[in-house]
Structure formats: C-alpha cells, structure tokens
Length: 57
Image 1 (cartoon, rainbow, N blue to C red):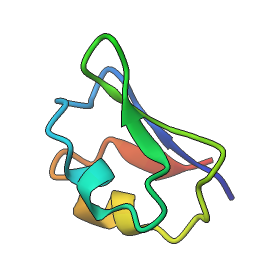
Image 2: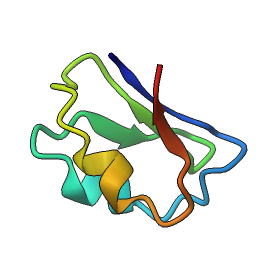
Image 3: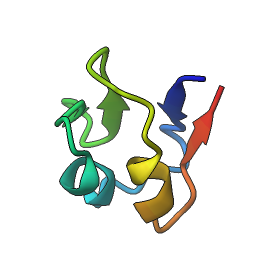
C-alpha cells in the first residue's frame, strides 16, 4: 500500500524526508512534502511524523 502525505496536516518540518532511507520525499514550492515514486513503503516516514500527516492508502 502506498503512503501519502496530507498537505492540510503537514507542518513542513521535514522529519519524514530526514528519515526516508531512499530519499523519496521532497519539499514542494509550498513548503509541504510529497512522497515520490522511489518510495519502498517501509513506513519510516509515517513513524517519524510528529503530526500524523502520513498514512497508507
């Protein structure tokens, strides 16, 4: 199952990107983060998000 970041909940802290082992998460122009195609669905991003903005679809 793919992971996604809720842009309404995301506070732009970067914790998800810092903990992604494959560097699949990048900041957009709006300062919010998005998960790209390189995601290996390990769950590290969701486990480290302080506002629970990341979920599996």
